[in-house]
Amino acid sequence: MSGRLNSHICVIGGGPAGAAVATRLSQLGHSVVVVEKQIFPRAHVGESVTPGVLPLLEVLGIRERIERQGFLRPERVLSHWPPHRGYKSLGLVPGFQVDRAKFDMAMLDAARDAGVIVLEGAQLLRWGHTPASGWDLTIAWQGKVVFVERCFVIDASGRRGLMGGKKRRYGAPTLGLWKYWRNCAISGHETRVEAGAEQWYWGAPLPDGTFNATVFVDPERFQDDLKHLGSVESVYQHLLTESELMAGCLEGHSMGPATVCDATCYTDDDPLLSDLIKVGEALFSVDPLSSQGVQTALGTALHAAAVVHTVLQRSGDREIAEQFFRERQREAVTFHRSTAAYLYSQVALERQARFWQERAREQTGQQEQGTVPAMRPTGKTPTGKTRVKLAPQTQILPTPCLEGDFIVKRSAVTHPDRVRPTVFLGGVAIAPLLYDLRTPLTVQETLRVWSQKIHSSQIEGVLSWLWENGVIVEAG
Image (cartoon, rainbow, N blue to C red; front, side, top):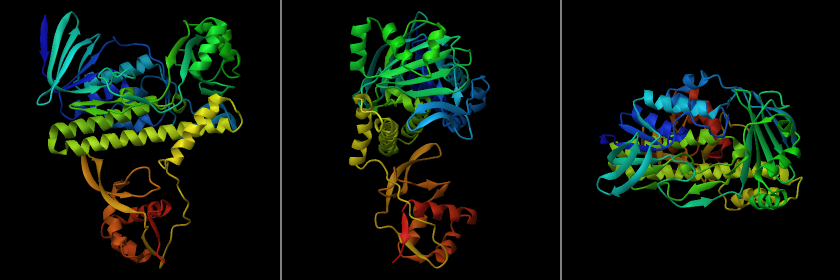
């Protein structure tokens, strides 16, 4: 038997990134099919989800759906990471400690509810591209052959990247060894993070009472230990004995063999091809130290949805949409690389092991390239008759940005101390305001001029932001 699906977009992979991009595009009026090789629910590692996912879930309209799943909501983390030792608050809004099988299924169910056709247990057999019409896919599903023709493809197939590309490592080679435990001598709902001698540990209690204990090591060190100890299981348990926060797992019951996975950070140098875009770990992966894997996947999915929507609805804006996506990818990789490296460098100050020193050097390299912003305090915001002007380094240039559901080109403020060009601040377009400061004005004059363009309640915040970020300076 065979059949055809009249879908304009095919998403390969039904994990959080695939489900999110499919949901959003369906909400925007597109016909979407998801091809997922497994049948959900399916087990998946990576249970810590930061509160940064909440605004992304709101965009998708599924925040309440996720919050109703009964996941743990820890408000702090137990960290033995120099220079800190003890509990640390996660802020005003807690994140989640999730059962990924349940979380991922809730995401995919939301896609179905949004009108997405979901093919679980499906296999992509063949695919080919015609520049004038898009991709033609042949899919095996439930004993049938299904064709999706003339479609736009979104690769959400994970780290392996089913649709090809050029993967490039941007972090130190790292392996993760993990296993689930039950009835551990560990109490509390907090995530646990610990820096060891030449490894680091991450542990997460889950809603069903199990505990995931993971150790991150250098591949060469793992191979040496494997030769001496004889098995992955022996290496893993030996490493747990060296942990202060995770050793209690050994007093519990193992729920299966130890598993090894690649935890090295990669980015794809081909994020977009003709009628194809990549999201989630098919696009890039982040250091597990950040616990931002799910958040990053959802972020790339929403950006990709805007890009695809723009390309399909406004074909003349394809170039600026693709530029937007490439720029966001580069910025995200730079941010995650430098943030993780900074955390590693804190340990490297105390420990000379190559494991820590190598990861700390990632930060130094980024700073030498000048890609990490260096925010400079500029003092108290000026008032009254103080004259201000645009800083010499400030430029106003056209740049792609997300406006509503589309990628458009707008005037943006650029400055060496900014990670990215800035178009809007709290919904206020910045560039039109700065045109007024090409000639120095007093603060009083600036407030009077701007009051004709934006609400008075917004002016002080905008002025303070521009001053603190060095975009405007005092006129001599």
